[in-house]
Image (cartoon, rainbow, N blue to C red; front, side, top):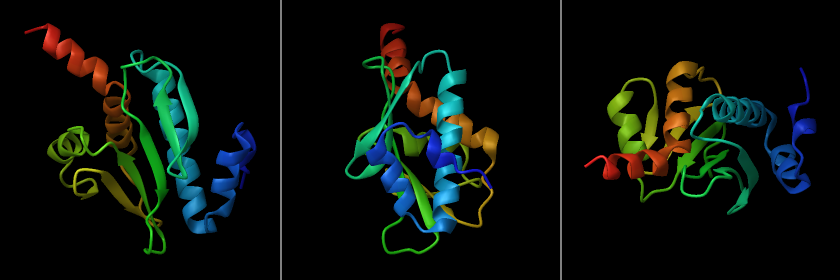
Length: 146
């Protein structure tokens, strides 16, 4: 098993990953890889900044007003569960729920929830991540098209 945390440039972000329980850490590191790969393959997303927001690994587009921040973390008080969080004042989780009602579990208007034993549909997950990373650009484009 490779130590993916060695590739995390920010020591504070690396420390957060190092502190997760092993079964959740590997899943979150995989989710991190999917986020970074999706950003690199999504033209309107551009470069991502990896940082901590509210103590959670967070991914935001370097290009202003292009995407919405994605945060990932273990679910508090629920061993073996982790989540991908979106800003609750966006329509992202609503959009994901509409597109993929049976592929994912959702929490309100802010999160996709996974169990450590889940093997999420990678294509659907990448699509959701790409939608988040281009959220503001798409909304702006739709508004100017009217």
